[in-house]
Image 1 (cartoon, rainbow, N blue to C red):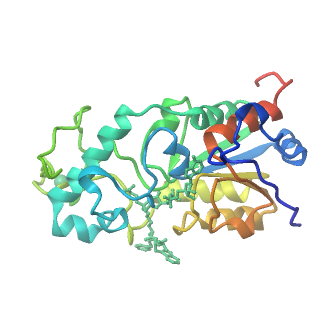
Image 2: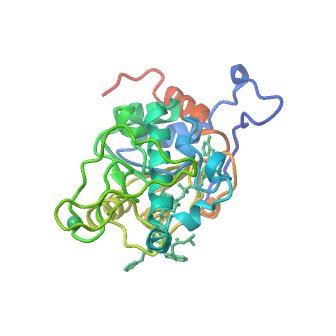
Length: 277
Ligand code: BJW
Ligand code: ZN
């Protein structure tokens, strides 16, 4: 059954005042408090307030004339490996210099309040882990886990990314076993999702009672279909996003606002007088 969704004011509202935040709909609080199996499904929006651009944001600086969706393909890496590797190293450096924000911390806290919890992310950064989340399911890979494009052996990448040339290009290192190029450990358009992570995510969505979608446009498949799996399993679906998304029609409740404000409020109001399990 669809229940009317409601909105929380966003901080982009000129009259926004965090001291006058709209209380969360009590039905959401009730559903979360009673939940035994919760899945949190995150996208780039959860890291936006850490200064990591979302995938659909216009790129800046050296990369402003490039479209992220065109760089994140096997064809781009084949055509110009130094350009694509340089872009990923630039992004790895940005993540290393960023810190988890209140949304990452709220998700790590939420996990301590529910009997069964799964965190599924499309993000390639490690900000959830650095906020204290464990067993994060990374559907689209991880920036810090590159591997050989030929033999797929992992490559031990130096912690600090090297300086790029002025144009941002860096030649990818070579595999010490077979000599082929090392590639970023991420899932590009047209590539299959890692089998184990995908099965774990599907299984969690199939068996949850609350599915909480945070900061994703819900446009990229098959990840976005997790929401449909949860809906078909009878879960209550809740979305936190300042903007409309591809999953608006599948949500029981939508909280329109930035995750870094809405999630801490949601966790605080839901478990205000409850001890952490
Ligand atoms: C905030 C906020 C704040 C801002 N607080 N929120 C079915 C139909 C049509 C197409 C397809 C289909 N099935 C497959 C496809 C093709 C394709 C696809 O989905 N294309 C779409 C564009 C239509 N999918 C694939 O190619 C996938 N592979 C596949 O299907 O393989 C099949 C196969 C079978 C057998 C053999 C071989 C293959 C692979 C998809 C891989 C996606 N990879 C990327 C790049 C990862 C590496 C990298 O980072 O460089 O993953 S693409 C990019 O999109 C990235 C993200 O994880 C992913 C999702 O984006 P996300 O997280 O939702 O971010 P944004 O930027 O879209 O949205 C940000 C949101 O945040 C917005 O809503 C903002 O409002 C919000 N926000 N500030 C809260 N403060
Ligand atoms: Zn190799």
